[in-house]
Length: 457
Image 1 (tube, rainbow, N blue to C red):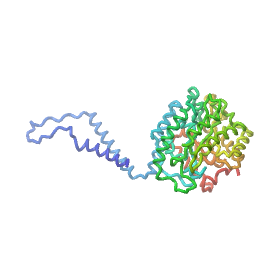
Image 2 (image 1 turned 135 degrees about the horizontal axis):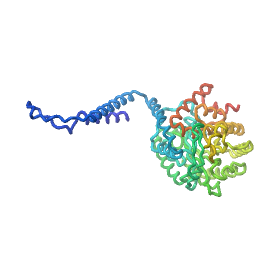
Image 3 (image 1 turned 60 degrees about the vertical axis):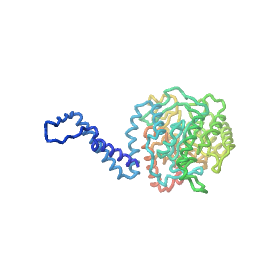
């Protein structure tokens, strides 16, 4: 369709310029040269302009003709590769400005849309839903649910929005995001900057209705125990809940988030691990976590749900935890039947790989490549402590398909990107998925589930 429209525009341009010169003076056919007015002298610059216009039209015709012979998958690959040309310009911008521009571009559909189906080996069932692939986008990128459709369209298996706080808050003073490009890392101390649950609920409600309407014809067959995609169509949506900085009742904040946003979520996350909200990480203690999870579960379960039931409830933990902390969290998760854990959030530590960088002295949570080993070790430990009974999402430092594969072998059922996506842009997503599939096939696995926890057996 787009090609036909393009050719129509080209034909119309040619017709106007070459076939229908309405502005040209009428021709007078006579034998007397005295009656023929002298031809106007065409400026040299005008000739160049005409040559350039003709060359441009010729290139458009040739390019359009060539594109018409290319299959959709190849053309889609070109679009993703083309983002590599644009992405470096973001490095010249302030990190937070670049971040806002990226979210705005995705919200407006100014990003490529993945048309190629995911390889069957990447598909998996979790929480009664079918994920087309295990690669997701972590919370923190689309904090206010502005670009859900555009981000899912990039080919992520799932997208997590938030963290969302009950009351709007600006977060910490700027500047609060700092790049460490040589290390592939980022430090942030945003502090749950959020437009609040009311704004996010309105936004998710509008997007939910639109996505559901567009995908109603492709819904799962009746009686299918596993629903393909999320509540509103292809792609799974997670909603990450946070607390307000000045709140004295953390549980009330999370409960309010559940009551307002859970109807749009395919899964919910209790974020108790950001290092940028004072006192938040104290909620990871055994007693505090147990009390909090009980209250949030009760708030979710008291709501009326259809046949699908309530959304799964996950807890996101920090990488800066002792062995005793991990044992306590695992015990609570098993006892209360928490649906999943996300491992992990950013770290307040500064590994040797970044310690010499002056930017590393900035306060805040460190994400990116330097976090990979630390978060993967915590992931493996938690898989062993929970005996593989709880789905784990591996997050922290993933920048390649091999990284994602190592997280899966360490116990992750799903994985999430954040910092690497900021540096690599949309082109990174199909590359990670393709490389992950190659890693699975190389080691003889036929599915993601077969590889989960392979290094823990």
